[in-house]
Length: 147
Image (cartoon, rainbow, N blue to C red):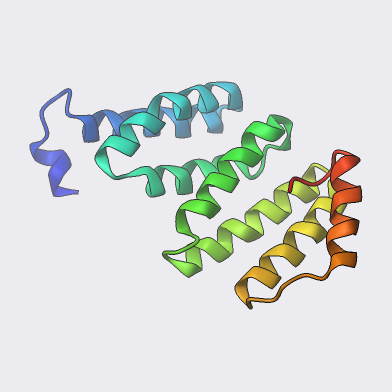
């Protein structure tokens, strides 16, 4: 990036780049909690500079292999999917697959099936009938699927 060559030492973009590098190192060293901490620091900076999508993509890759993060990792993957839902469809598809894989690593099979059905119906403008919604609600009440 040419911008990095001319950036001042405390330029927001340079800080983003350096902290992302530290996050890569932390994840490579197996320190997932440090990587998550850096994500929390970087997110507001990325939002300010218009790099949120790129940040979510990078951290989505980090966290997709760490089901021990539980809901927090899943939330980041959901943010990534939502960010690209109306934009780059290729990234959206990969984010969707990563989210399904992550749910699988967490052994939340019912949620994968319900989520995939909902996404498929939404993409093809299909209204799900009452029986399907009732099944989703029963699963939701059991704590496995969000509405």
